[in-house]
Length: 129
Image 1 (tube, rainbow, N blue to C red):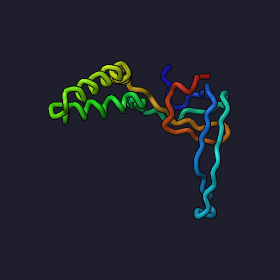
Image 2: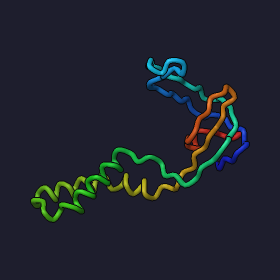
Image 3: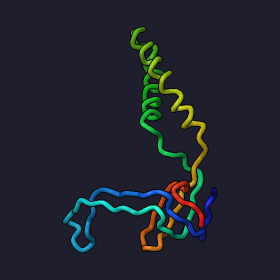
Image 4: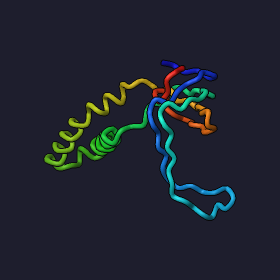
């Protein structure tokens, strides 16, 4: 489903934001906390942004790191180390290939009816009403 600005949507999964909170009144004081939004909360799409690839998984980042290492220093490595590196790359290649072949995703900015704004969120988290 492709969302467009002005469309009413519903959050399809519960979201939890955890981290540090700072009060506007006294920015020197930091609080730990979390905010949860329940599935089913409704809102309106304010903006859509296309052309962003999803964040790479740990396996994808590791493949890219090891591939760079092999390309840069593979010729200088001892044969056993190079073979082990090539085996590890082969085991990570399916994750990297799937990530590479994945289409560019769309992100949205949604103003929820309760006043909260979710920005740069994958469109798959929302269902049209």
